[in-house]
Image (cartoon, rainbow, N blue to C red; front, side, top):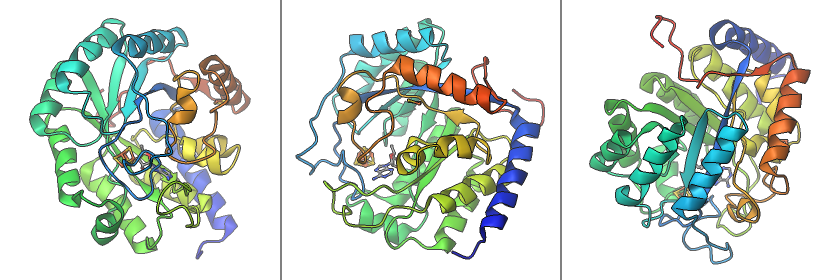
Length: 324
Ligand code: 5AD
Ligand code: SF4
Ligand code: FES
């Protein structure tokens, strides 16, 4: 890589200062509920792809989802992220009552359920979802076409535009280290996040999954991910930027490093029991053998050790113009 270790440290230190000045020392914890690992898509990198017969599929019931949301509130989390594959079972009619009930618990709801049409995004927004995560994955359209068969890059970009129009806080992001990805395209990813004025940007290393067509590829370089995160903090000073689970998976302690390099969000998993393991986007996922309670105290201690703290507000994107 072109960058020296010293340059990486300088960049991270600058990003850390900008993070402190613009979003403060509070770290927002978003409780992640992995409610279904069933997916109609076939992304080459992902263990939940429909052609992967090895993954044990599951879908939580609405009652199970609500129970996890209540527990998330009990851990002090202000937001729950409902994440799943593109599971056709979870229509708007199934999701809307779940969203209403979670809202009634006083929690903010983030959805991460992939591509839907604008009418569905609208109905979900009206049912109480405030935020939506949809990674663009890569801005290299040719690479996207190769790795996401049957999907369209333009359609994905249009989904992000719809979400924006509908007043969602929009999170996006990309994978770093996809086979064939160039440094130039990573630079374009950052410009894309800036042009979208993304409220949240999640960057993670590609982690090869042996049950997918990219099983034999090399993993993404975590130094490159770190430099991306620091640059994104410098260019989008008010964005919410998570220290991702994929980083922690590739290197233990990496989440902490990312929180000191520009990140200000962690998404602890609140999914329980064997479902944690079965939500297998990639192998070796950190915390699979841990409990939600364990992760909550682990993170609390980690933050305290770094002179940071668990933010108590709901963590909407801050705006330097005074609009909260
Ligand atoms: N390695 C890292 N991240 C992955 N994702 C899917 N498969 C992998 C993998 N093998 C990410 C995608 C998706 C998010 C939910 O998980 O970026 O948007
Ligand atoms: Fe499905 Fe998302 Fe995995 Fe693609 S990345 S296969 S859409 S869960
Ligand atoms: Fe899960 Fe540390 S956050 S064990």
